[in-house]
Length: 156
Image: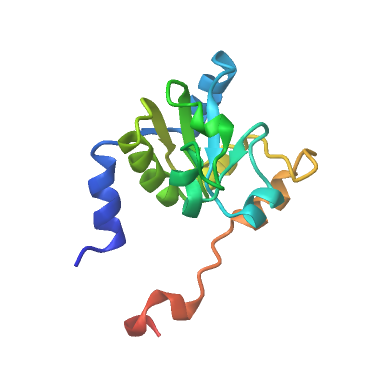
């Protein structure tokens, strides 16, 4: 049986990662870059990168295809665009990036460190109303909230 870290390491063999500062530069130089946020809707609504598209991880494969209730036209038409997949910590984005490549997306990146690292670099977020989110609010949102029982039986 594989563990999550093994699965991620395997997928990383074929998924390109990008650092937050390189992502910011890429977005500034190419207005056609699609930032795909695969977090859940409540996470996205709290704060996200301005202009990003939210398609939760659970439906992304059907959202990038025509003919499904989840179809997201911007994503379905993005196979030749640069797509940077983001999530909270970088795990969901690796798995999503791998699957997008299988589905014919040619220029896919996963944000290394996830939005936590993006926040550490103090890059900007907006809320559901597209208003800027302060760094203190972002820090609190992305703080590690791991509970003792989540560490496993031997840790408690």
